[in-house]
Amino acid sequence: MNLSISALLSIGYNMLSGSTGTTASGSSSGSVWSTILLMVLLFVIMYFVMIRPQQKKQKEDQAMRDAIQIGDEITTIGGIVGRVVTVKEDTLVIETGSDKNKMKITRWAIQTNNTNEERIQAQREAQAAAKAAEKEAKTSGKKGGKKVERTRKTQQISEDTVKSGDSASSQDSAESK
Image (cartoon, rainbow, N blue to C red; front, side):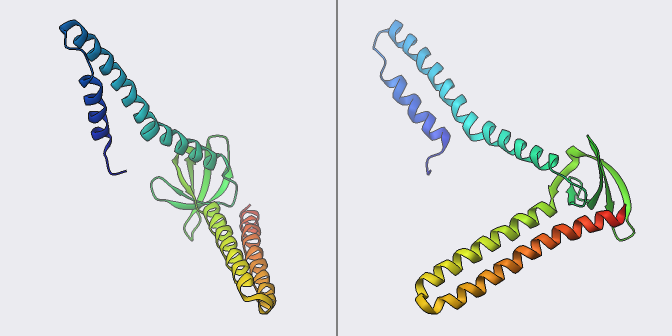
């Protein structure tokens, strides 16, 4: 996409305005319609370039905020990192620091759910390792059988680690109660 949006719009405008008649009345009516068409085209482009992605991001952020659970580690928009202790409809109570200071915050102040991002990252790494193992097994033939078994064990260990991380965060929240 080497051409900028303004360059495309000016080319379109020149094409539309250049095809009008030579009479004064025909020229002005053609110019009005081309201007209206250009404005509609500009609005459509702006919608797909700016408005739609912003709405999609807002929906993802709201879904993330609604999925917050006790024990999740979050970061607020102010940069405060803490672990969720209590979840209510519009507010959360988080613990921060080693001395376990408690703070009450609103849901809209949550920027990221660090626990959820760690889970997603671990799943992606496990999937990438599994794909690499399958690819290696296909290329190595019979000798790859033992390697596939080893990578399956490695993948099982990584999945157990992710699950134990979930249970550890549940245990932490149970201990804090």
